[in-house]
Image 1 (tube, rainbow, N blue to C red):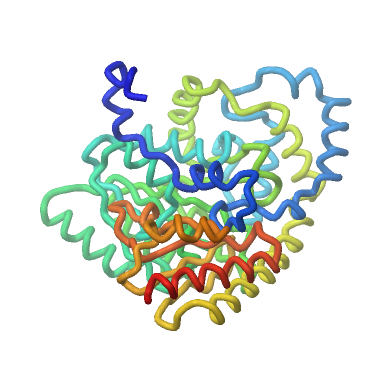
Image 2 (image 1 turned 30 degrees about the vertical axis):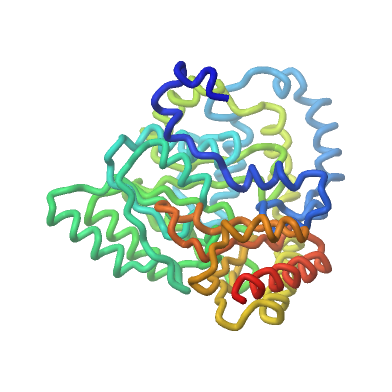
Length: 402
């Protein structure tokens, strides 16, 4: 492996592997109950609708759908995304504020590359989405962690840290936040908290990158409007994804932002992959237009609520009493804090040996702390496998404690 390392750029030293991707590779084709990936339940894919739409697109738009298209996305999809955004409470925007990406992962990659220089002060939740952290780690910023409470990020600690930075004559660059059904913590920030985050951004002059991957997947109470919906200054950059509401195989996401920011995103993307696949964009545009997504969401919510309840009940039954865990109101994950003496990374091989995979929680912390934590996915496995997986995991944890 080291044969060519002398040719590699310095930047490659900052690249970190995604533990989730590694685990998916490891468990593929094996008889393992995977609580690791963030995979949607395949029964939620509207396959029949997609088949009909695909035929329609090929009959009516083949010459455009199979051709190169604009870097920012096809006009039809951007127009529909303006409508879809309004259903999340984001109004006062037009197609020029929308940019279509290859999943929200590419959106985050481009945004962090155009905004973050080495040494910049960047705020993230602790824990936070590991693939976003990996992109940020490669940018080499100064990280500042905001601890997660049951109600979302601890905004008092956040403000304290902002004050401290200011006293030292330093300026924050951006905050990366997942306010709704946070991945992995499962928390949702209330409206008061969202307003406060925006006020702090205005007061201390930093940007907010708001990841709303699970905004449509809140199954307990109402899904609060995104921070972007409250944004009057244009300092919130919003990302959404079709992976959780249509199909992850389409690799489609989008950005909602100020036109000046969209312009810079466009310049960057032209050098990455020219444009997002035209074909899947046409299908997605039609899926919004025909209400396929809107009609499918209640079914997804219902199923995930049931699966979450099955997992929480199994955890209650099989996990040691001194463990604690999140009770998510949406999304796909439960986050678990085990007794301090347990190292979830070291315990993983033992769990895999027994046929269960999970993601050790330390990767979700910018500094790799949180060694005693783990993220468990409830959206993908069938209900009986959820119970069996948690039962086995409970045994492994109890043996570790003994």
